[in-house]
Image 1 (tube, helix red, strand yellow):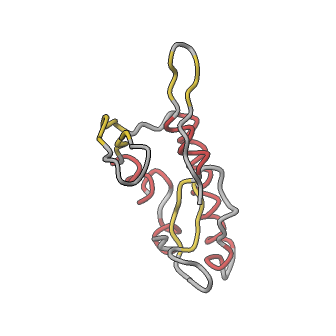
Image 2: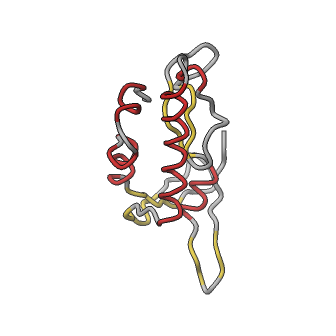
Length: 129
């Protein structure tokens, strides 16, 4: 959840968001043709932000932070349209929800999970809501 006081007080380098990203792991699994078929864990990978992703996420965080710092009602101005890789969205079903959380955009997940095989970039099929 986005705690406005915490975000106002902390630069990105000391943020809860970065701390969570540093602890993240990626679990790769194979899935069957339909819901009745089992899925299996293929591998577990360390999560590592490269310099470009780090800077983009830092900019996304600072956009939210600056909105909170520079506006009297900054929390209400946070919208899912903000951020390139990380967006502040209503937590839960929306439609009147006042809490917010950081969510990874589909474009970030695709970049994060893409791999190179025989010199060709393979991007996983990630469905967005």
